[in-house]
Length: 332
Image 1 (cartoon, rainbow, N blue to C red):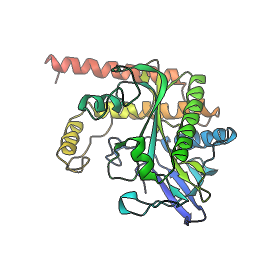
Image 2 (image 1 turned 135 degrees about the vertical axis):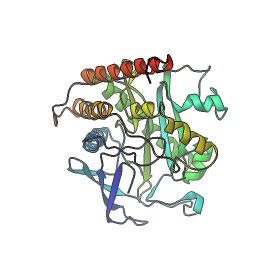
Image 3 (image 1 turned 30 degrees about the vertical axis):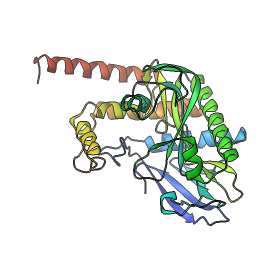
């Protein structure tokens, strides 16, 4: 059971043979590692599932192996599954195969407002040099060439690693890590091109991999959706980021950030408010419209991306106007 999708195991994975499972994508959403939020976004799960299946099929045509087997229904896909071995428990050892690589690989083509890079630069946990940049970046900056980060996957809270640490944790060779990086960049290039074809900018995203029984690198989980990647339309976020941005304006966000700083967890001690109904509808249409444009298949006859994003832009302007009136004491 995940916060946004569930996995039904039909055949467990072994050391020498992949298992079989079915992902069921739900309409739930999660932000800031909190888990399920109090609302659902109608048809979000199906939109993500269809986008992910399209990407697996197209990447397969480009030679990128994945665990994708077939689309079972609108919101379900059948996949090969690998073993989950925890490095911190000593379960992962040299020479093993058919396991989840315990890493998330993040590629960045630009640094939009909201990118975690700025928070890390501000608190000193990274530097422009470590990121491969020649100077301090600014929000919205497009990079001359993509950069890659790597973080943990199987720890309670993801943390960034050096590539040397990632190589040791994953029990992969230098050559295998090089192959993993190349696969990630190939996937990034495909997603960037597809986004451009439908009028979007691909800012950043993440991918996960496994090693199959023959220790071949395979793309797993999902990629290239509005939950795993950040896209922009005329500088406006077209992804789950719009939900993060909304909650950053609520008192709940300040509380959970304080709880994290105090080591109390990820918001277990407070409850987030529900989204405004207007934003729920805008987000629903965003997922549907991008899915239909991306896959080239009309499922819901959703409004076009431009229409949806203009409605989101109007929502932001109205919200900002109300906030301005509150600050002046004209309205409570």
